[in-house]
Image (cartoon, rainbow over all chains, first blue to last red):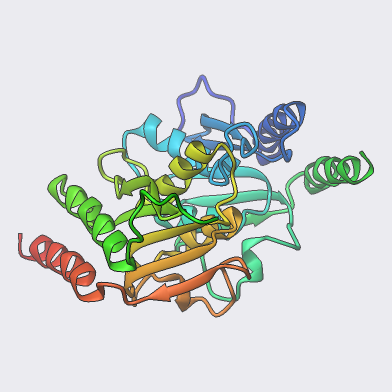
Length: 154
Length: 154
Protein backbone atom coordinates (compact mmCIF):
# COMPACT_ATOMS: atom_id res chain seq x y z
CA UNK A 1 0.00 0.00 0.00
CA UNK A 2 1.21 3.50 -0.81
CA UNK A 3 1.49 5.55 2.37
CA UNK A 4 -0.66 8.68 2.58
CA UNK A 5 1.17 11.78 1.32
CA UNK A 6 1.23 13.29 4.79
CA UNK A 7 3.76 10.68 5.97
CA UNK A 8 7.38 11.37 5.12
CA UNK A 9 9.15 8.18 3.99
CA UNK A 10 11.35 7.37 6.94
CA UNK A 11 14.69 5.57 6.66
CA UNK A 12 15.59 2.36 8.52
CA UNK A 13 17.96 4.49 10.61
CA UNK A 14 15.05 6.68 11.67
CA UNK A 15 13.10 3.69 12.97
CA UNK A 16 16.16 2.11 14.59
CA UNK A 17 16.70 5.38 16.40
CA UNK A 18 13.17 5.01 17.76
CA UNK A 19 14.03 1.49 18.91
CA UNK A 20 17.17 2.95 20.54
CA UNK A 21 15.00 5.44 22.43
CA UNK A 22 13.12 2.46 23.84
CA UNK A 23 16.42 0.75 24.76
CA UNK A 24 17.44 3.90 26.66
CA UNK A 25 14.15 3.85 28.59
CA UNK A 26 14.98 0.25 29.59
CA UNK A 27 18.43 1.41 30.72
CA UNK A 28 16.90 4.08 32.94
CA UNK A 29 14.96 1.26 34.65
CA UNK A 30 18.17 -0.74 35.08
CA UNK A 31 16.88 -3.29 32.56
CA UNK A 32 19.07 -4.89 29.89
CA UNK A 33 18.86 -2.05 27.33
CA UNK A 34 17.08 -3.53 24.32
CA UNK A 35 14.31 -1.70 22.49
CA UNK A 36 11.97 -2.42 19.60
CA UNK A 37 9.36 -0.80 17.40
CA UNK A 38 6.96 -2.36 14.93
CA UNK A 39 6.36 -0.45 11.72
CA UNK A 40 3.46 -0.90 9.36
CA UNK A 41 3.08 1.22 6.25
CA UNK A 42 5.89 3.54 7.31
CA UNK A 43 4.20 4.15 10.65
CA UNK A 44 5.10 2.97 14.18
CA UNK A 45 2.24 0.85 15.54
CA UNK A 46 4.00 -0.56 18.62
CA UNK A 47 6.92 0.38 20.88
CA UNK A 48 8.47 -1.75 23.61
CA UNK A 49 11.55 -2.25 25.72
CA UNK A 50 12.85 -5.09 27.78
CA UNK A 51 11.00 -5.38 31.12
CA UNK A 52 12.11 -8.76 32.45
CA UNK A 53 13.28 -7.39 35.80
CA UNK A 54 10.44 -4.93 36.37
CA UNK A 55 7.82 -7.58 35.59
CA UNK A 56 9.75 -10.54 37.02
CA UNK A 57 9.02 -12.29 33.75
CA UNK A 58 11.55 -13.82 31.37
CA UNK A 59 9.05 -13.62 28.53
CA UNK A 60 8.95 -9.80 28.69
CA UNK A 61 11.60 -9.23 26.02
CA UNK A 62 11.12 -6.10 23.91
CA UNK A 63 10.27 -8.14 20.82
CA UNK A 64 7.61 -10.30 22.49
CA UNK A 65 5.85 -7.28 23.94
CA UNK A 66 6.11 -5.55 20.55
CA UNK A 67 4.43 -8.53 18.84
CA UNK A 68 1.62 -8.52 21.39
CA UNK A 69 1.12 -4.75 21.10
CA UNK A 70 1.26 -4.72 17.29
CA UNK A 71 -1.26 -7.56 17.04
CA UNK A 72 -3.49 -5.73 19.48
CA UNK A 73 -3.29 -2.60 17.34
CA UNK A 74 -4.02 -4.45 14.11
CA UNK A 75 -6.66 -6.73 15.58
CA UNK A 76 -5.00 -9.73 13.96
CA UNK A 77 -2.19 -12.00 15.01
CA UNK A 78 -0.15 -12.03 11.81
CA UNK A 79 2.47 -9.36 11.23
CA UNK A 80 3.33 -10.28 7.65
CA UNK A 81 3.04 -6.68 6.49
CA UNK A 82 5.07 -5.33 9.39
CA UNK A 83 8.72 -4.67 10.11
CA UNK A 84 10.21 -5.21 13.54
CA UNK A 85 13.13 -2.93 14.35
CA UNK A 86 15.06 -4.21 17.33
CA UNK A 87 18.39 -2.94 18.65
CA UNK A 88 19.91 -6.41 19.21
CA UNK A 89 19.62 -9.68 17.28
CA UNK A 90 16.63 -11.57 18.74
CA UNK A 91 17.08 -14.69 20.88
CA UNK A 92 15.59 -18.10 20.06
CA UNK A 93 12.38 -17.35 22.00
CA UNK A 94 11.77 -14.11 20.11
CA UNK A 95 12.70 -15.68 16.76
CA UNK A 96 10.10 -18.34 17.58
CA UNK A 97 7.55 -15.60 18.25
CA UNK A 98 8.48 -13.92 14.94
CA UNK A 99 7.93 -17.26 13.21
CA UNK A 100 4.41 -17.66 14.57
CA UNK A 101 3.63 -14.00 13.73
CA UNK A 102 4.87 -14.59 10.17
CA UNK A 103 6.80 -11.34 10.54
CA UNK A 104 7.30 -9.52 7.23
CA UNK A 105 10.75 -8.04 7.88
CA UNK A 106 13.17 -8.22 10.78
CA UNK A 107 15.66 -5.38 11.08
CA UNK A 108 18.18 -5.59 13.89
CA UNK A 109 21.11 -3.47 14.95
CA UNK A 110 23.95 -5.35 16.67
CA UNK A 111 24.52 -9.08 16.58
CA UNK A 112 24.25 -11.17 19.74
CA UNK A 113 27.13 -13.64 19.56
CA UNK A 114 26.00 -15.39 22.77
CA UNK A 115 22.24 -15.77 22.49
CA UNK A 116 21.30 -14.68 18.98
CA UNK A 117 18.89 -16.89 17.06
CA UNK A 118 21.39 -17.31 14.24
CA UNK A 119 23.49 -19.57 16.47
CA UNK A 120 20.88 -22.23 15.72
CA UNK A 121 21.60 -23.82 12.38
CA UNK A 122 17.98 -24.63 11.61
CA UNK A 123 15.91 -21.86 10.02
CA UNK A 124 13.89 -20.44 12.93
CA UNK A 125 12.17 -17.50 11.23
CA UNK A 126 9.27 -17.88 8.82
CA UNK A 127 10.48 -18.64 5.31
CA UNK A 128 8.93 -15.39 4.06
CA UNK A 129 10.57 -13.13 6.67
CA UNK A 130 13.20 -10.81 5.19
CA UNK A 131 16.16 -9.93 7.40
CA UNK A 132 18.26 -6.77 7.45
CA UNK A 133 21.08 -6.41 9.98
CA UNK A 134 23.66 -3.87 11.07
CA UNK A 135 21.46 -0.73 11.16
CA UNK A 136 23.11 1.59 13.73
CA UNK A 137 24.88 -1.53 15.00
CA UNK A 138 27.61 0.43 16.83
CA UNK A 139 25.13 2.53 18.84
CA UNK A 140 22.92 -0.47 19.61
CA UNK A 141 25.83 -2.64 20.68
CA UNK A 142 27.56 0.07 22.71
CA UNK A 143 24.50 0.55 24.91
CA UNK A 144 24.42 -3.15 25.80
CA UNK A 145 28.15 -3.58 26.29
CA UNK A 146 28.43 -0.59 28.62
CA UNK A 147 25.43 -1.86 30.62
CA UNK A 148 27.04 -5.24 31.27
CA UNK A 149 30.41 -3.60 31.94
CA UNK A 150 28.86 -1.36 34.59
CA UNK A 151 27.14 -4.41 36.14
CA UNK A 152 30.43 -6.31 36.36
CA UNK A 153 32.20 -3.32 37.89
CA UNK A 154 29.30 -2.29 40.11
CA UNK B 1 12.00 -28.95 50.41
CA UNK B 2 9.71 -31.55 51.99
CA UNK B 3 6.07 -30.73 51.23
CA UNK B 4 3.79 -30.11 54.21
CA UNK B 5 2.11 -33.30 55.41
CA UNK B 6 -1.29 -32.05 54.35
CA UNK B 7 -0.37 -32.43 50.67
CA UNK B 8 -0.73 -35.89 49.19
CA UNK B 9 2.21 -36.71 46.91
CA UNK B 10 0.69 -36.49 43.48
CA UNK B 11 1.84 -38.50 40.48
CA UNK B 12 2.97 -37.02 37.13
CA UNK B 13 -0.27 -38.42 35.67
CA UNK B 14 -2.28 -36.41 38.18
CA UNK B 15 -0.65 -33.16 37.11
CA UNK B 16 -0.84 -34.04 33.42
CA UNK B 17 -4.55 -34.62 33.89
CA UNK B 18 -4.76 -31.07 35.24
CA UNK B 19 -2.94 -29.83 32.14
CA UNK B 20 -5.43 -31.83 30.06
CA UNK B 21 -8.30 -30.05 31.82
CA UNK B 22 -6.75 -26.77 30.65
CA UNK B 23 -6.42 -28.15 27.11
CA UNK B 24 -10.14 -29.00 27.15
CA UNK B 25 -10.99 -25.45 28.23
CA UNK B 26 -9.00 -24.24 25.20
CA UNK B 27 -10.99 -26.63 23.00
CA UNK B 28 -14.28 -25.21 24.27
CA UNK B 29 -13.03 -21.80 23.08
CA UNK B 30 -12.15 -23.26 19.67
CA UNK B 31 -8.46 -22.77 20.45
CA UNK B 32 -5.76 -25.31 19.58
CA UNK B 33 -6.22 -27.57 22.64
CA UNK B 34 -2.98 -27.35 24.56
CA UNK B 35 -2.87 -26.91 28.32
CA UNK B 36 -0.21 -26.49 30.97
CA UNK B 37 0.29 -26.30 34.71
CA UNK B 38 3.34 -25.29 36.72
CA UNK B 39 4.03 -27.29 39.85
CA UNK B 40 6.23 -26.23 42.74
CA UNK B 41 6.66 -28.42 45.81
CA UNK B 42 3.92 -30.78 44.70
CA UNK B 43 1.49 -27.88 44.34
CA UNK B 44 0.00 -26.21 41.24
CA UNK B 45 1.04 -22.55 41.20
CA UNK B 46 -0.09 -21.68 37.67
CA UNK B 47 -2.57 -22.98 35.10
CA UNK B 48 -2.91 -21.89 31.48
CA UNK B 49 -4.24 -22.87 28.09
CA UNK B 50 -3.58 -21.70 24.60
CA UNK B 51 -5.30 -18.37 23.87
CA UNK B 52 -3.73 -17.26 20.58
CA UNK B 53 -7.06 -16.81 18.80
CA UNK B 54 -8.96 -15.23 21.68
CA UNK B 55 -6.18 -12.73 22.34
CA UNK B 56 -5.07 -12.34 18.70
CA UNK B 57 -1.58 -12.97 19.96
CA UNK B 58 0.85 -15.62 18.75
CA UNK B 59 2.81 -15.36 21.98
CA UNK B 60 -0.16 -16.57 24.05
CA UNK B 61 0.85 -20.24 24.07
CA UNK B 62 -0.11 -22.16 27.21
CA UNK B 63 3.53 -22.49 28.28
CA UNK B 64 4.37 -18.78 27.93
CA UNK B 65 1.34 -17.75 29.97
CA UNK B 66 2.20 -20.42 32.54
CA UNK B 67 5.74 -19.02 32.89
CA UNK B 68 4.39 -15.51 33.37
CA UNK B 69 1.79 -16.64 35.92
CA UNK B 70 4.22 -18.84 37.86
CA UNK B 71 6.80 -16.07 38.06
CA UNK B 72 4.10 -13.69 39.22
CA UNK B 73 3.09 -16.14 41.94
CA UNK B 74 6.65 -16.71 43.10
CA UNK B 75 7.72 -13.08 42.78
CA UNK B 76 10.84 -14.16 40.92
CA UNK B 77 11.57 -14.86 37.30
CA UNK B 78 13.44 -18.16 37.68
CA UNK B 79 11.52 -21.42 37.76
CA UNK B 80 14.43 -23.70 38.58
CA UNK B 81 12.49 -25.41 41.36
CA UNK B 82 9.38 -25.84 39.24
CA UNK B 83 8.01 -28.44 36.86
CA UNK B 84 6.04 -27.48 33.78
CA UNK B 85 3.46 -30.07 32.73
CA UNK B 86 2.29 -29.42 29.19
CA UNK B 87 0.10 -31.66 27.04
CA UNK B 88 2.18 -31.27 23.86
CA UNK B 89 5.94 -30.92 23.28
CA UNK B 90 6.75 -27.19 23.38
CA UNK B 91 7.68 -25.24 20.25
CA UNK B 92 10.94 -23.34 19.78
CA UNK B 93 9.48 -20.12 21.24
CA UNK B 94 8.32 -21.86 24.41
CA UNK B 95 11.57 -23.83 24.73
CA UNK B 96 13.33 -20.46 24.51
CA UNK B 97 11.11 -19.16 27.32
CA UNK B 98 11.89 -22.27 29.39
CA UNK B 99 15.59 -21.62 28.83
CA UNK B 100 15.39 -18.07 30.17
CA UNK B 101 13.27 -19.25 33.12
CA UNK B 102 15.87 -21.93 33.88
CA UNK B 103 12.99 -24.35 34.23
CA UNK B 104 13.69 -27.21 36.65
CA UNK B 105 11.78 -29.97 34.89
CA UNK B 106 9.77 -30.14 31.68
CA UNK B 107 7.14 -32.88 31.47
CA UNK B 108 5.22 -33.15 28.23
CA UNK B 109 2.59 -35.55 26.95
CA UNK B 110 2.59 -36.08 23.19
CA UNK B 111 5.40 -35.22 20.80
CA UNK B 112 4.96 -32.55 18.16
CA UNK B 113 6.62 -33.91 15.04
CA UNK B 114 6.00 -30.69 13.11
CA UNK B 115 6.88 -27.86 15.47
CA UNK B 116 8.44 -29.47 18.55
CA UNK B 117 11.60 -27.91 19.91
CA UNK B 118 13.47 -31.18 19.54
CA UNK B 119 13.50 -30.73 15.76
CA UNK B 120 16.29 -28.22 16.40
CA UNK B 121 19.56 -30.03 16.81
CA UNK B 122 21.07 -27.42 19.12
CA UNK B 123 20.24 -27.72 22.82
CA UNK B 124 17.51 -25.12 23.37
CA UNK B 125 16.58 -25.82 27.00
CA UNK B 126 18.74 -24.80 29.94
CA UNK B 127 21.47 -27.36 30.60
CA UNK B 128 19.99 -28.06 34.05
CA UNK B 129 16.42 -28.67 32.85
CA UNK B 130 15.33 -32.30 33.20
CA UNK B 131 12.91 -33.65 30.59
CA UNK B 132 10.25 -36.34 30.95
CA UNK B 133 8.03 -37.20 27.99
CA UNK B 134 5.13 -39.47 27.14
CA UNK B 135 2.94 -38.89 30.23
CA UNK B 136 -0.67 -39.54 29.09
CA UNK B 137 0.67 -39.07 25.56
CA UNK B 138 -2.29 -40.83 23.89
CA UNK B 139 -4.90 -38.61 25.58
CA UNK B 140 -2.89 -35.44 24.96
CA UNK B 141 -2.26 -36.26 21.31
CA UNK B 142 -5.82 -37.43 20.60
CA UNK B 143 -7.25 -34.09 21.67
CA UNK B 144 -5.01 -32.21 19.24
CA UNK B 145 -5.42 -34.60 16.32
CA UNK B 146 -9.22 -34.61 16.54
CA UNK B 147 -9.21 -30.79 16.72
CA UNK B 148 -7.26 -30.44 13.50
CA UNK B 149 -9.30 -33.21 11.86
CA UNK B 150 -12.54 -31.38 12.68
CA UNK B 151 -11.03 -28.14 11.31
CA UNK B 152 -10.11 -29.81 8.02
CA UNK B 153 -13.55 -31.39 7.67
CA UNK B 154 -15.44 -28.34 8.91
